[in-house]
Length: 249
Length: 203
Image (cartoon, rainbow over the protein chains, first blue to last red):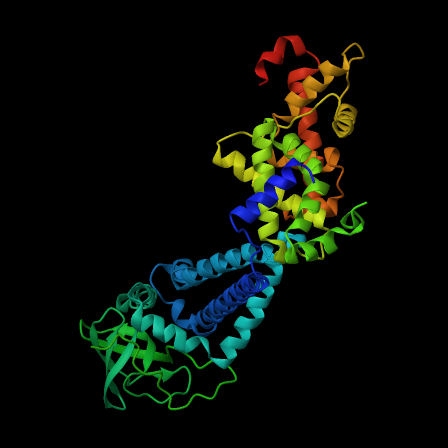
């Protein structure tokens, strides 16, 4: 043995240096794998929420919103979620390259793979509605998220331009509701001339989008009504009402 | 003859986990190779090289259970040594400086490759040429210098470099190619035509 190996062996003995356990490395690898998997699931949830925003948005109503189509679409775009998905996928990809063989794969292939998996997973989650409780939880308990969604929904409150959106708070008769809009203002909705865009059971708590005409500061005459959050395809809508969403007093 | 000299690296790793003395054999096997690599990669002086080398071997020892048998021990240990060298340079705020020695056979390979990239006037002496090439290489960004050292001085395959630097093989090939291209540009810019006039620009 030469000088360096002796020195190293002496150091190992003197400082009681021992190899780290095999379990430690197995645990670390498992942790890394779980982190990557977890992040892909999270981005899948993000994708499901984005799909929800796109497919359940009332595009008919958007056409009438203030500022024109482009501004309305930009307002409605779930950019917060899109940024979140990009960030999560970037972190997942970075972690993936730290796995044993992850570095051997080209970054664009890793990115394409994670986007594909997130997309498929997002679609599955959307159709099984697993994303909905998460969004409800965020809306009710994470105030910045609630404010963002409020701002987004607020784009549909423009009675001067003939659109209004909010929650039914009272059903006075078949021809008259009380509604609180997403900017927290109460309205009497005149339904005499109204057509229902989709079939649904009007009930207290149901969120609706309305096209019509502002009659005065308190009364809005509806000509077209659509349910605010449509039921996703392939899912039976039980009970009709999505329930309170935090906009109620 | 010591029996451990006949054992493979993988066998010595397994034995080292039971008895640290076997690890000494692995150190003996790779000491010169890694010492030379650290010097080539960093241009550090001998005392610092020994520090880095010692730290690298201790890390290799503590991580023996993480040895990935899909890689050769050499590649795996290179990765640790490489990382320890870079960490040392960062910690001590030193700059990576590729070292090219006239009598170093593998340096000769890098010199020949680099020489083939440029037109060299015949009257330039070999020592002068080495000086110019060393200075030009050290003007390249660190990531290019690393791949050049691994490819042409350590004479490693792209796959091994890919596993050492933890990047895809295609990226390694691209970087080697770019490094040669940049070297050529720098050589044209600073050296070969007006060496006397411009050499003061080089560190």
